[in-house]
Amino acid sequence: MQKHNQKEHLYKLLVIGDLGVGKTSIIKRYVHQNFSPHYRATIGVDFALKVLNWDAETVVRLQLWDIAGQERFGNMTRVYYREAMGAFIVFDVTRPATFEAVTKWKEDLDSKLILPSGKPVPAVLLANKCDQGIDVLMNNGIKMDQFCKENGFVGWFETSAKENININEASRCLVKHIIASE
Ligand code: GDP
Ligand code: MG
Image (cartoon, rainbow, N blue to C red; front, side, top):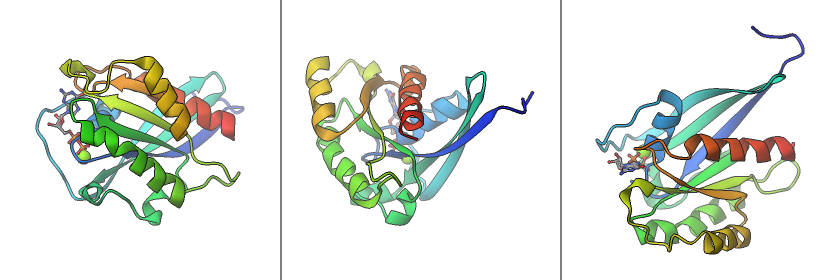
């Protein structure tokens, strides 16, 4: 039941990163609680809505923007980024090139989108497919913490859309930073 003193927030969140890293799978898992191993690169922009009962007074509606097809160019248009409040940048722990692309995605984001406050939008880094047991990085939290600090990520998580690992946690981390920055 909606209480009259309840606050509602609507946040547009971007999910970006190289082709095949699991962006669509993460959104599907988070919003629809399912996973399909079948690869499908649709063309266009897709939206999914997730409603969080954040606390007793606050409802958060997340509008997740998936990209499909355009990520092969390694950047997005300003129109796509417009009015986003936060971003997930995803890479695939089994493919080093997708991690190398992370800084490029972060630069693209920060060059095209600035919050009304003048700050960059909060971004969380997702090391996806952690169920694969092949971590090309180093399985080293300290180095990743340092990478996040140097590159302006508010946090990072090892995730699996397949096994449903850490996706809720990553989202809570991002939303927490968005609420704090408002
Ligand atoms: P996108 O291009 O970034 O949207 O990537 P997709 O979501 O289409 O995923 C690409 C492929 O990786 C698909 O075959 C998925 O089933 C697979 N995939 C996505 N997430 C995971 C994961 O967490 N673990 C494993 N093992 N496979 C995944
Ligand atoms: Mg996709």
